[in-house]
Image (tube, helix red, strand yellow):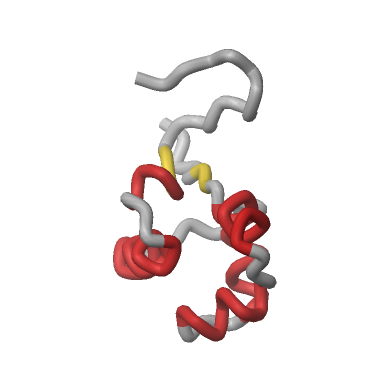
Length: 79
């Protein structure tokens, strides 16, 4: 069983023009933590995952998944 947590943090940051440092300051974590999360090198605690989703004002499942997200424009749809 894979324990990889996939995320869309980088995409959400880019859409909103937010740097890693700005996001880290808003969340109260080290800016390197955001990089680790984006690269999948670190899985967030439930508390941090919920805070990230709240920061972007989206449901947590929009940001995180246990399955890879389809590439934008791939034509794949998720259930």
